[in-house]
Length: 606
Image 1 (cartoon, rainbow, N blue to C red):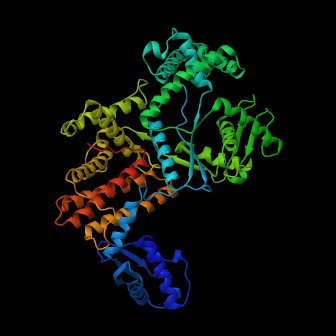
Image 2 (image 1 turned 90 degrees about the horizontal axis):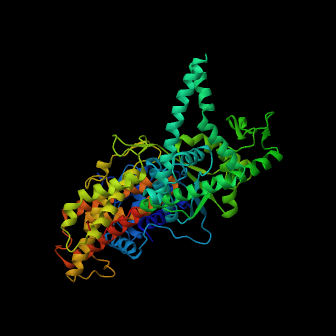
Image 3 (image 1 turned 60 degrees about the horizontal axis):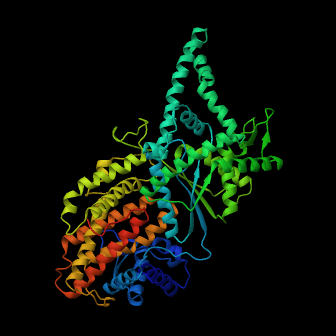
């Protein structure tokens, strides 16, 4: 039983014994004692005054005295107004350290047969271009959130919805037909997603030229500039051809479908490479080319049930005015679907595939309104989790300078960013790594990969997801301060200490004796380790990877200060050495488990 639980049970017993009343554990508020007062944990007495019918100081004094006599974990207490500061006994801290040490997954909750099933959607790429910096934040948030929800005892299904249909896909296909000369990823040596992205850019370049020429022609015929441009955009031969190709795709034209499948397969192979480099994966991938038809069916069902209405032009709408919103288009007048229809179809397919208890969509904050509407529509259509769906809304991410621009010249390419981070890590850690004995070139490259990706992931995940952020590559890879490499280096340092202890034949006892010596700084570290479970639980409630990141940094900082003040292997007594080695081992374990929730690896050596 942890110390907080012992105190809560003790306070409940105290109130019953002293005042003859039962109180719920929610009324027992325990918090960490402020650093300017003596004590480790503090009971806030004010919620109990209705029961005691005494002054705050007198109530605190009564309960403090009872706990000191009846709760073995309490060594002493002091009262400051309505706050009872409790000093925990050294033996209780040692017992807690032993509990932490015995559990490889300390802080995680185990799943059971009755655990809720949480589905998390992230990534959601388009098959006409490679992944970019925005996708990087999305994928890292989605993966981390999945790990956090699992650590809170949930069953998790990680899912992706690929936007593999529509006019933007046809633009790439048409451009490849016109200017590709049969190029393939193999013949060019390019990743498939980059090759297709190049043709999407080529389409746009030629299309703009056509629009410019047509606009000038229409203006010469007397149209005003705005109308001339609008007409030129609609009548440019390339866009007309692209729309024709889309219609042929919708009608299952075998030639168009074969080209579409071939080019999409190139893109998927490219995406998979990027996902592997990012360390993310999915349990199930859905494709909008399948889900949009399901969505149309669900909308038609809703129409038959009177949930939606049809306008004179044959378009189908949902009236959301009772919910304080407007009317929402679900099917165009020509019967084609919109994004909302596709999302309804995807939800329907997922619900048939899995008994979902909670659905979390990891999508940027520009889609806040979309998910507000989707929640209402899914609830209307009878999905049990519709009303409670979670839109994990995150802000945009940008670079502070113009470096690492993609071949499009407008967005930061994910593959370029990953390669650059690993290269930067290799250069910056060269001196440190070269000092390691017997290290091979392969091991050096692996350390550079772990550190580079750790820097990237930590810098993005330490920021509150709801905020827009600037990603600074140079700052992210610093070995000092609130960075991934700083935390990784501390883990590697602890592992080095443990290896040295082993080499010196220092035996760490399997179980520390209850009377093992423990000083104030060691108690603070044990207390910090004990907080991990609450941090994981809170991160699950708040959907907040940044809470985990900040805890890992605080723990690392605290350990480094302890290590600065006290020698581990050079401790005065064998008993002190044993406590410090067990403590160090569990700091390393907790760093590893915490960083794992962020999708970050920690090296054994650096």
